[in-house]
Image (cartoon, rainbow, N blue to C red; front, top):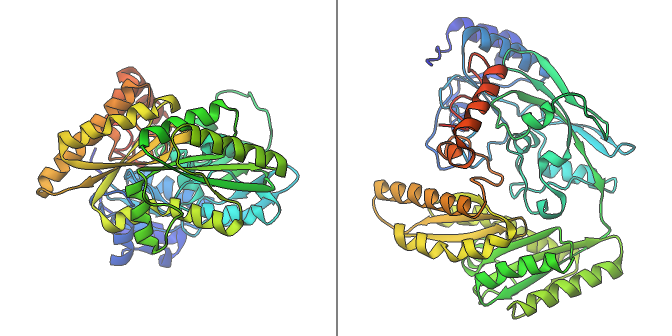
Length: 464
């Protein structure tokens, strides 16, 4: 459908809702709102509007719904699939002012936050009182609202699950402007359909999150890491399942190739304990008991050695662990600094990770690209960095799309999925039907129609 332009009448009404200083047509604001961290070309909105309350969001949506103006909610814009791109122009609804941590409820082990609160700030705030918000996506500058919209996972998903497992309640503004509250500070609730679960992971297409209640857990007292170099990526990936089979409960099992290690070292200008072997596992364990921690470390180290590791370096101090995690989390920024690339956010059953990695060389040779697998091997989420090796822009984009398509087909053939945690957004939307089939796509479109009958909220996302 065609969406109208922002005329003087709409501008005046927007300024009446949020104040003139929070309605921006400035070049800088428009340019910032035109992109996220995906390689997608910019899509400038007509205007950037910055509400400060749920009531203001509601009033904006009522106006947009009446005038048929498209709206895309934005937080930190760290998404990798173009979900926050204003494809049709319209209003970029920047939630940047709604960034407060409203409450830390130690009695119920919950935190109440606004959508633009940064994940890293939530981590720090709750840890001050001995609590823990487990979801830990690589982008610490990401917002809670964005994590909810993509059901982000991260490194600790192996033990703790994804964002969905830690969202207790949401305040949501619907496309009509109506405000609903779903979920609550209760442990059990079987009252009707779970709209809470439907909204989580919906990529901002069904409603706009204006407040979230998050579940917390007590922070473990002791943590340690193993950094294990392997003679092959296949062996490192195979060791992952063996560690789980031996009843070790790691909170993270991260895979890095030598190429990734060298790229991070170059980026951080700092060496890791070893950078001469083809592949590495980072194994994170934690416990409230030092003896239990020691047992888990010993078992995990033994399994690594038995499966081809040449050593098992232990990071048992806070500073060593900080540097190790900083290195792992720097992978994305390092690659984007030195290479032209895109990423396939593949997730396969954990036991199929070695088979999946073995097939990457065939895709590389077929499309003349380099593919560097990095990621959450413990939960099967392999981030495939697809690097440009040359050719014209047209040849590169064709090779990139063909590589992503082949990787997705490999994943689906192994019982995997299209996206583990980044979402489909705009860049991966055409692959939805391959995973779920036409019937499920139609069901999703029907749900969208119920929530957003006029199709104004984040159009053109999730499906083609």
